[in-house]
Amino acid sequence: MGSQSGLLAGKVAIITGASTGTGAVMARQFVAEGARVLLSARREEQVKAAALAAGEGAIGMRCDVTNEDDVRAMVARAVDEFGQVDILLNNAVIPGKDLYVWEQTLENWHAVMDVVLTAAMLCTREVIKQSMLERKTGSIINFSSTAGWMGMARKTHYVTAKAGMRAFTKTVALEGGPYGIRCNCLVPGGIETDLWINWGKRMAAEQGISFEAWKKKSLEGVPLQMISQPEDIGNLALFLASDKSRTITGQSINCDAGGYMVG
Image (cartoon, rainbow, N blue to C red; front, side, top):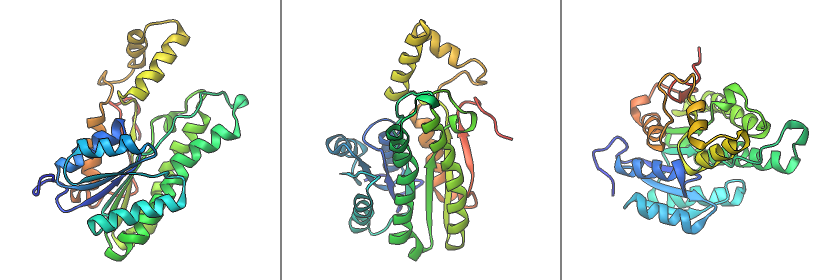
């Protein structure tokens, strides 16, 4: 099990979309800081492997976060296994197909809305109902994107869903506050995962340039001239999940090397 004196010692977390990428990395970080963690994703074999890699105190289970029964069962499993849920990371996401708005399909639109926004509502509802409300404590972390601040061509579905996460965060913070439940929104820019690299390669090919040239171009105007690693996102999530951020709620906090500055 993770450190008994870590930042999250004694805490229980659920991380959705945790089979690969940032979700799997955050699970390892949370376990290392003493948390017991339930990792969920639609790909059962991958999420169980990610839980094994995260270490003792982590379990993986298949869950379609757009399905009410699956979400109820996921939260119930965490309560049964660990006794409570202190932390929820609404990390599940799909990028959808790149389409101009005049090409947009309801299938593409609804698929992304369901996995990003509807799933966040269902998971939030269930952790509050099944554990946080009664215990009057909890930290919920939603994941947006700087695309939700700036917009992005051919991404109306994704941008709208990610912008909606910020409004959802504020409302949950208002409703949960009197019960000791905090809710914040972590807003990454690019994260150097396979998903981002594959998208970058597609963009580079469309522009007729190398991936390296595209990456350099994407960093123009970014003060730190860096792309975040999954661990960078995890470090901020650790802080927001912990009691060190006990008076921070309803906030959307960027983690993007200064690419988009709010205020």
